[in-house]
Length: 68
Image 1 (cartoon, rainbow, N blue to C red):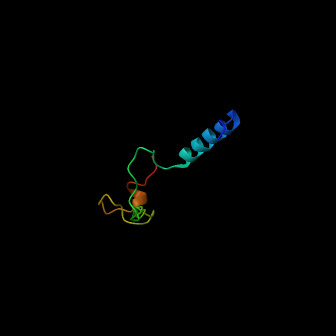
Image 2 (image 1 turned 135 degrees about the horizontal axis):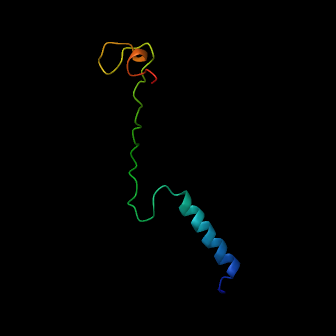
Image 3 (image 1 turned 90 degrees about the vertical axis):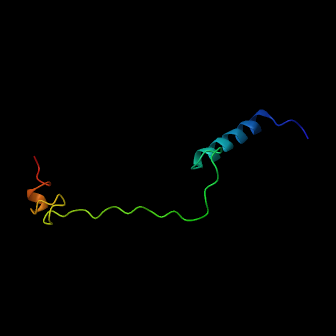
């Protein structure tokens, strides 16, 4: 087999770089487990007219939600 020309080797290097850029982890990291990962859920947001989460008993808009 003949020696690969410069164009072919550059193409292969570029494709390898693209493949590594798309990878989520580096090649040195251990493989990811096959089990699905549970997504974190955002906490329920406080509405303006809900009771303030600080425990003051006031509405959120009159307590911690007040613009200064």
